[in-house]
Image 1: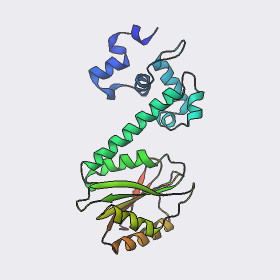
Image 2: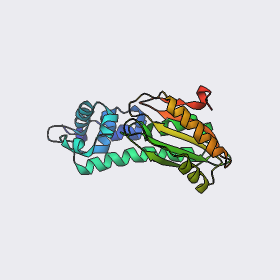
Image 3: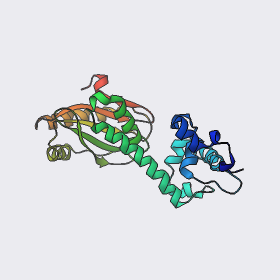
Amino acid sequence: MTITAWPLDERPRERLLRYGPEVLSDAELLAIVLRTGVSGKTAVDLGRDLLDRFGGLRGLLMAEQGAFCEAQGLGPAKYALVRAVLEMGRRHLGESLRRDTVLSSALTTRRYLLASFRDRPREAFACLFLDTRHRLLTQEILFEGTLDGAAVYPREVVKRALVHNAAAAIFVHNHPSGHAEPSAADRDLTVHLADALALIGVRVLDHLVVGDGDIVSFKERGWL
């Protein structure tokens, strides 16, 4: 039986329109994105199979194109669609930050940074440049490295802060290992960067380390 033969109150799209997306299961949401199933399976059945295959939504959304397209019923077009949905979610969170101060939107900030950094396969160091009211001017990934480290150069951070006429900054980097606990090197680097930016009147508000589902804040630890 196809989904169009189901009662209206059981069809994912109609349920979303009537009750809102929060009432749908992961498989039902995925079915709306995929639109069609495969021979002998509805889009919801296909969604369940894919969630099992990739270990959930996160695994599916972060799958490489080759692995994604190996699954029955998937191909480059659906891969592009899923990646577009993921990127729209990230950009939505980014726009939310720009409507308010980063510091007063702590939950939104953490959601955005988790979505942007926790699944990166290599360590990346970014800076959120802020204006005098601590509103986000821009975010830049300044350095990328390997699985366990990235070389960060204070001079380049200072140059970018000047380009954006920033008044304050928040550093962000990820730990691909999944453990968000900062290292001694992370703490030393933060001190050097804060000292360098202080020379041009830019205040470092925080350094956030992103792990797998967790973020450690230097400010909350009392290190800034």
